[in-house]
Amino acid sequence: MKNADLRVDAYIKKSEPFATIILNHLRKQVHKTCPGVTETIKWGFPHFEYEGMLCFMAGFKSHCSFGFWRGNLLKDIREKANKSEEKAMGQLGRIKKLKDLPSDTVLNRWIREAVKLNEKGKSAIPKKTIIKKKAVRVPVFFTKSINSNKQTAINFKKLTTSQQNEYVQWVSEAKTDATREKRMKLTIDWAKEGKPQNWKYMARYK
Image (cartoon, rainbow, N blue to C red; front, side, top):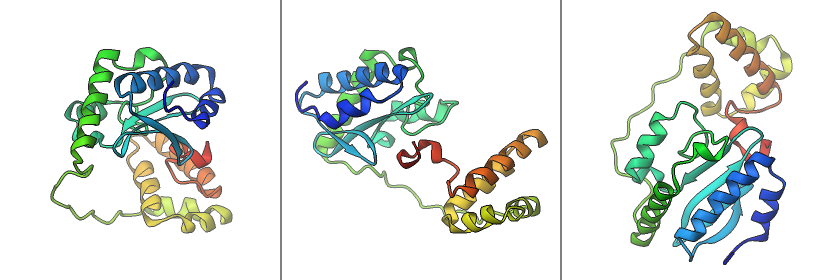
């Protein structure tokens, strides 16, 4: 495979068996559609470059992820990401088997569109009106639960404001008491270890 990176070979080899199949397929389609692409490892997982960052893929314990660096400029990709019920890093949701991927024809079309964007040098951030985020209100039960464990309270304060807010929103948006209690318990356990709410999608915690 032209312009292959041995580190990507190693990454795929140590992945879960189901992930190896998916990652090899994605890798093959990217090289097939864009022969000039080069590989690298950034933030602990494979990235593909062509006239800049093009796309990336990652394998986790129970799913894989794939995304385009400028995916927010690809209309079909944006729509798919918004419709996906299982959110994950990238725009294709949680990929657990090959059938979860779009057909090779569709995938290759998206890759070609991403290549054209890079060749034109368009910005990955479309112009839009900046909306100031509202401050997140922290429920009393949340604060009491966090402070019930000394180590959790200490490490929770070390998280960034954004990471703290993600936990608050995640717990507060639970639709049932049972779900809220379950999320609160996970928050206490994860924060105790200094992990942000979306730690499962971060390479450093893989």
